[in-house]
Length: 134
Image (cartoon, rainbow, N blue to C red; front, side, top):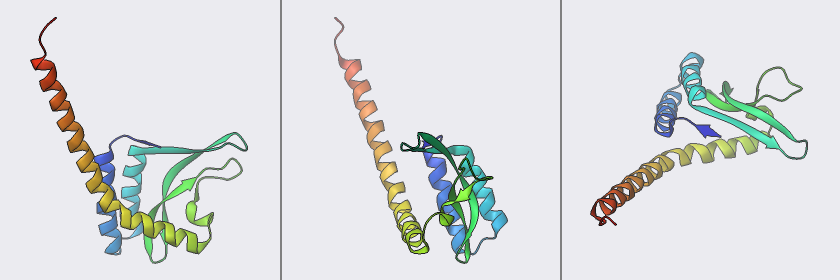
């Protein structure tokens, strides 16, 4: 999986979750889906058959809400198949629930990691400036 702009992805995910919880229509969620697809690309490697399967987000009805659902483009399918069509309902519900509950804490963790990285960069720059010339 490659993410072009993690901060923007987290912001879009947060905005989309708010929209979804306010019963956003398909068109609204699809606008988020398209933006996310510009920032995120992914493939799954199936070692047993030596095949790479492209993944992208597709706006899919899940329960009463529209979601940006991971979907896969299998060689024998026409277009992308949403993850919800590949797994049993209970597994999908648990997975979505876990993702939904983890998104906000992950966002805070990413902020802390970025702040730590910036602090280390400043410390390294200060160290290099004070190092005597050889």
